[in-house]
Each structure stands twice: as structure tokens, then as C-alpha cells.
Amino acid sequence: MSSQLSVVRSASLNGYLELARALGIDAHAMLRRVGLNARLLADPEAPISTHAVSDLLQLSAEFSGADDFGLQLAARRSFSNLGPISLVLKEEPTAMAALDTLCRYLKLLNASLLTRLETHDGLIRICEDIRAEPGARLDQAMQLAIGVMHRILRELLGPNWRPTRVAFRQKRPHNPQSFESFFGTRVDFAASYNGIVCQAIDLEQTRPGSQPEMAAFARNYLEAAITQGQLNTQATVRQLIMALLPGGRCTAQQVAAQLGVDRRTLHRHLASEGSDFSALLQNVRVEMVKQQVQHSRRPLSEVAALLGFASPSSFAFWFRESFACTAREWRKPSEG
Image 1 (cartoon, helix red, strand yellow):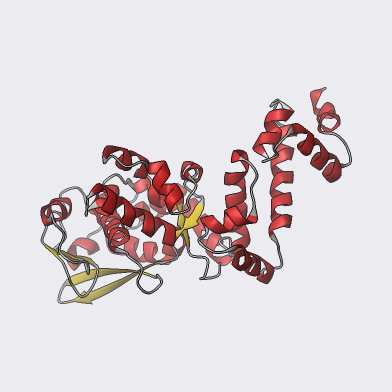
Image 2 (tube, one colour):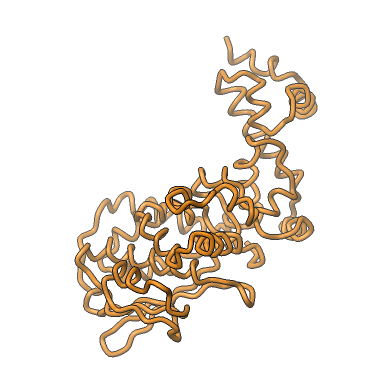
């Protein structure tokens, strides 16, 4: 995927709706304010704009008065939110090996998040940065990133593990105690880096592996995702079309908004890959209709709605144009 289309899995907002509700935020109104469709949160793999996510977290913190909003969201995360990567990390012999693996596959989770490891005097510093436009407000997004990294380390090293130090570039918050309570150690603010400092010996201890067969399967999947370029613009747009179609007519303008770009930019990216939005929309509809008409007993009126048609008649017209017969005629052979 071109670096200009900066997206992250919608799983990055797992727990947002619940946290917003607990803090008195109208989550759906806040999502609309940053241009995100709440329906996408139901699919953890759906790509959404990293810029929109950062704005959402920042606005939510300001509205609720919780300057540790990103950290509170991280506290609601589990290892499984990483998807297939979690299986591979658990299988690694040491936490250090797991971190190396995480750095390799991180771009499949969030292409804008950069993680680097620095070693000095028996300490390892895990530094994190976020690619963003100049002037972007990233305090809450960084809290979330470092908070999730801390939870990953505790999953790998056990609940009694504590880092040596944690640092944020952001200014000192109103309630620094919540940060120290979360990390269980000293937290520095207005620091020169964002990250977690650990004892190297902790990360190098051998840990038992688990489910090596499942981990091998997951690793093959992740390698394919990298080497075969599955995260290109076409794949991203296809995922969004499938997620947005059931809610009504899916347009290039709607998809571009979810990616944080304008429609012309989206068309330019697709054209560079030899595709266009109309062709992708047609392909997705054809794939979906084959499954729904041939392999389900769902009424055709419901199928029409799932494919984003405003009426059964418009669906019927599209079907005849695409398959040279009616949907009922096409379904008959499988009914017998």
C-alpha cells in the first residue's frame, strides 16, 4: 500500500465504545465528527484512517477531561486483539525474539507505527514513534501504543513483571499517578523519546512455547501478507466496500473518507495498481451475491440490501446485466 494511504486495523479501537460510554461520551457522534463509520468497528480487520483514529482519541480525551484516555483504552486490550500475530509471539522462545517478530509484522497492524530497540548497559529501550503530518496531536495515540506494548510484555513475561522506566514526550498530565499505577514504575514526561525501558535479562529469559503448529500456520499467513502485497490499496478498498455495503449505497467518496483522503487521491492510488473503484465494487458484489444467492435461503430483498442497492428493482436490473438472467432463475438449479 502506498504510504500516503495511512491505515490501521479497526481493532485498534477495540473497547472504544465501552470506554466512551463510561466517560459520558456520545461515541457514535464522536466517530462521525472525525469521519469514521461506527459499522467498521464490528470488523477488527477493517482498515480505517490512522489520522482519524488519532483525532478521535484526542477529541475524546478533551471532551471527557481524561488526559489518560489512550491509557485507559489500552487497559481494555487483550493479546488476542493482535490477531494472528499473537499466536506467533506466544511461540517465540524469549520475549526478545517475540519483540523482533512484532517489529517485523507491525506494518500489518499499523503501518504508521515505528518501533525500534536500543541496547545499553544491560538495558533495552523500546522506542515508539508515529508517522504523522507536522502538527498532528498524538499524545493519546502514543499513550495507546505504549500501553498496548506494556500489556504485550506482561503477557509474555508474566503479571509480576515491571519495566525499569517509561517515558513520554507529552507534557506532564494532571494525574500522573494513573500512569504510574498502569505501568507499576516511574514515568517521565517531557522526555526525549516515547518508550519503555526494560532489563535485558528479563527479555532474554527462556519462556515455554505454546501451540507451535498454530503458530507456524499463522506465520505462513503473515509472511504471505507481506511478500504478496495483500495490504495494497485494492485490498484495503475491497475490505471497506464489504464492510460498508450492507449499510446502504457504498461510494468512492465514502471509502475515501474512511481512508482520510479525497476521492481523487483514492482514484490515483487505484489507477497506479491498474484498477478503479467501479471495478472493485462490481467484483465484490459478484462475490457476495454468489454466496448469498447460491448458498443461502435469504430472501432476495435482503440480498439486495446487503449488496447496497436502494430497492429490489435496482438489484434485479444489476443482476440481469451481470449474469444475463434473473436471480430467481439462477437460484433454481440449487433448489432442486
